Length: 298
Image (cartoon, rainbow, N blue to C red; front, side, top):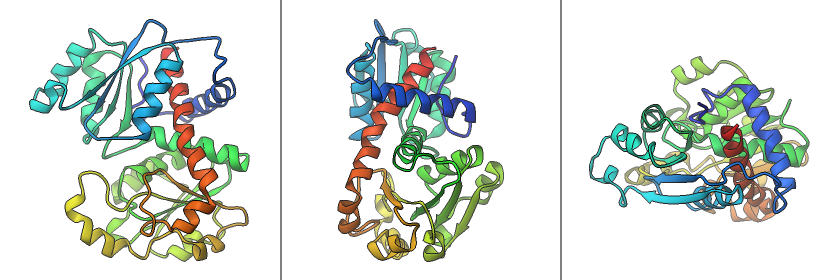
């Protein structure tokens, strides 16, 4: 049985298949001849709130012929301490698949193990695989390919989004730079496990020089609110602004996985000048997740 639990565990050939499916599904939206989730009901189990993830998966499942049941931890016994393996065993007997957005990577992996139904990681503290697949598809749309390109992540380099970028770079043919203060750089063991195609630096200007894509994320992720003041102080110099964008390659993209806090990790000016790319990136969550759902159904 197939799952999408992380980019670490997803072979490059499967990434390529998902991206090819994405192109087809986006081009034929509203005219699908196949509905691989017909007569299926999928559960969305969210411990973390969401806009893009929830809407894109609910719409995507329905467009593929399925039905969807949204369950926050306040709706089910997980919120009262039921072990994930017990929840998984129950839901595996009733649902046809599950999309999980939570804190611990182990919860997603345990759910997949005990439920015996296709399981998708819609975000954990360790990885955000659906986001990076959508980002790769967006770069492919806007620049023709991600192969041979240089992508620079700027900001908190020790969170889930850059971790998934690291795994993608280790398996696909593009170069990744991460510009972050030393305290916010990826863990050495992650870098060692993932391998090449990666440069980590605290020099934001050097990282931006000649890059094809400048990419950022929020400085204060969910669950880190108590660190807000410290994070803003440490990451204040790691902003995508018009001066930084001028250092990048001609026609470079600025990307943000949203929500964006304008004036912090990215300026309002860059958000608006790059709005077509950034909101196409958000839309592509729908298309790539439909491709993941279709790939899992095969």
